[in-house]
Length: 501
Ligand code: MET
Image 1 (spheres, rainbow, N blue to C red):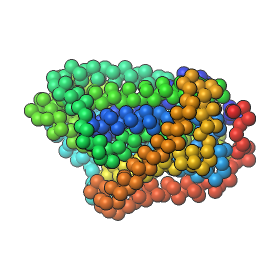
Image 2 (cartoon, protein in one colour):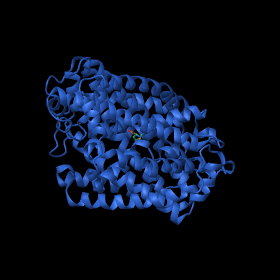
Image 3 (cartoon, protein in one colour):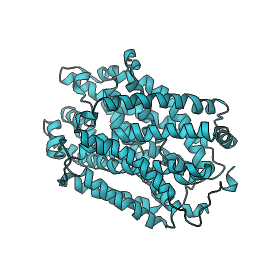
Image 4 (cartoon, rainbow, N blue to C red):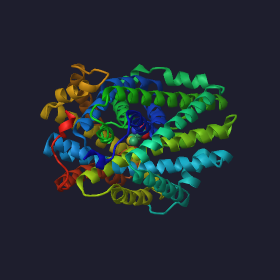
């Protein structure tokens, strides 16, 4: 029965939880550096195309699947067609990987919230981040623990495990209903402060000036689609899981539109705030915006600390910025974990607390083992890239091809959404999801595969990329197929719930 799985008490709680999932590290930490690495302002056009042509339509798809079939991702797929169950476990495995490294970044941000008060990095933010803080060793694998990361990681995991054990409504729902308004206020205050810095306009100009030439690079489009899927939390089971927790009459398309636009608004706000701050830094140091922003995952942890050191009221900027990262990160991490927990609960006879422990404790251990150690930042960079390109995007491609062209379920799902949705999808949605989305994803996937095969990612050791890139992305698929072979618990029906149509 649905009560046994848990659920959200109202559409409001569901929307807060979905926004809580969508607005995460991707919006604040990932978006600015991905935008920066892909031509700065040039990135906005592919980003918006990806949002409206693929991101939001795919969000409706996830909602339709989870809402109509009322199960975790594996159960939802199994209820559409038995043999597609492994696609759901693929989502679960992607979430396992993301959860492991996501917690590490939240822990870094928690530490940096405290560091901001007295600007612990002195005048060498980069040396501090990679040296004093991470003890980074990018030359290979190292299991030397870094206590400064280990402690906050353990604390983050304890908090998150407690939220998960409290359940869908009292854990995830409550955390988001409280956390998201606080986040919006804190982050809004930060952006306003950034806009008043000298030189802010220089940064905004860099952000908003389109570079048409960059549009000819497939890599820029791949990055835009990757960012949209990651940022909206679509294509890897999260929204399937959350929508399975809603009543049969819920307006899913109206909710999805609110969530999608809220997420991208927040992301653009983050872009504005970050680039305004970069403009300040460029002006203060007499260089161009291009020169101040180092690319890569260090942008938030190197450039921002430098700004915090140089700007008036820097400590406040720092606490708001890193505090926002922690809050946004936690409300997303819970959604990643829920994909796994709900799948395990549907498949086995386990109560909420038992399933939470069985899922989270091993992931927490792996997370600490790989990311609280000196090679953590290298493993994280590799795993993040590969699980996005060859996990999320690839899984999304396979899912739309299977749904649109093999199972031919799109008209059915469209009717399901339109029967209760305030935003009517009609014929344009099956068209977008059935043609534009697979063609775009397919093209991007092939190009991205060629690029990645051409050159070892990020200049790391080949074996590191082999294990933590190809190995992790490929291993997720192999394990997914194996998990789908396990039997369902006796009480789980593989029929579509009768009240759902
Ligand atoms: N949507 C989240 C973000 O933007 C990440 C993925 S899953 C919760 O950070």
